[in-house]
Length: 147
Image 1: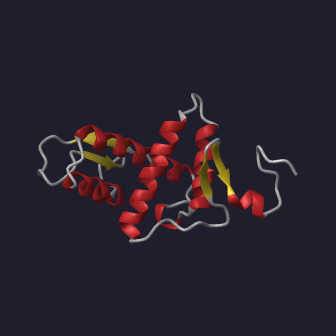
Image 2: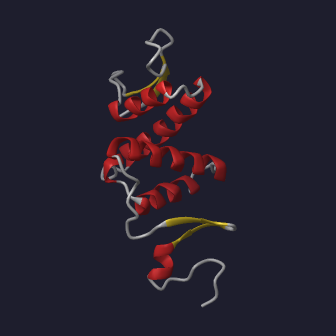
């Protein structure tokens, strides 16, 4: 399935002009509802476009991984999403990956009313990068820590 982000300039002021659609131009409701809410919050058009492309990237990843959906996501699932991004050429910058993760956490909270669950691994930010608490709990070596 082909997904796209389109711009519809002649749309209600309370709706995002950026719309996530499939190959038949059917709207991807979960993404567009979130974008509309951000428009109501009066985010800039540039921010809406950036959010739209982040959601497009995630939606395309979900198409490639049918068992993954927004509503089944937890922090452990986000690690799989990050791993796949790090295997892309060209590799996205850390800022791009972190922005995508922030948008996904926000859209999850928007639809569910609560933060994304931790899962078996938990992503934490440190001064030196991202670590997973699950590695340490499972007795696996953690980068930067001696055994």
